[in-house]
Image (cartoon, rainbow, N blue to C red; front, side, top):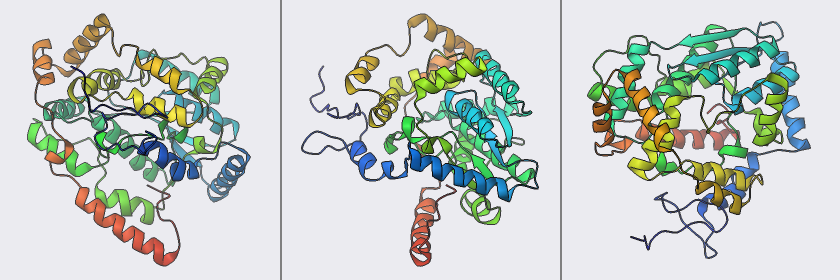
Length: 381
């Protein structure tokens, strides 16, 4: 049956599967408007960006001249972090390179990471998350029925990265996050993967064992300890260069021998399953839409091209069957139990204890202090 309330943006491809979307008189969505009026102000894919980035690099090098490393870089094997590694190498930056293995790496991701560090001549530090604990947490999240099933991986990645940086006296975190491909993401679709309150609440309800080795970052650490006590700063270099993903991919292939994944986030088998099956099946969310909308806003794709891309199936039947079997086996459950979990009711993260109220209070305080000092305090977060 046709959904009479369905509407799609006339400029990008975001639509009413985002329950909080709104449109102006011309049918242009709030995401496009926010990009124009707010987001784009922090995007410098030009000479100005190159100048700003060089100044950041020089400051970072000067501050760390007597240390072994200038910064820490988390390397996942995805295009963003891999291309960033290449650009850091070419800029003469000395990163502490860390890969966090949450147990879901594809073989291709492992090979890509190896190719990159070998090309750059860097030593790779691999942090392996306790699989029994990760497995228990991942199953707890599946049983919770919430949208963002990547929280166990994402939280482990960032928590491990920050703990490792502190251990080695590094206070610059280099992130592959970028506005060219990630400027649009509906807030109604997700909540912060760094909400340790939410993570522990979900695990207490659905988990079966204690998380003794799985590292988390609490609210105080995230918003006060790391930025103000440890003086941690996050830099996103891809926002200061003309980052065109297709060209970046080709450069990685030519220089490093990088192999392309069949799908976005193909470096993680679970992420592929969660984004291409769990989200659309249980919530009606197609994460290609914000990704493609971001590329449209960045001028890297036309709306017509994006609409054609969205006509392609998210999974073919055989591939989905294989991935389901792999995930069930990896998690130590039967195929039938996985199917039963997939049919459980959907819930929102807010159905479980979380740090929303703490965050709101913190943002109010941040705004007041920023106003009094006339200084932006959000460079870390």
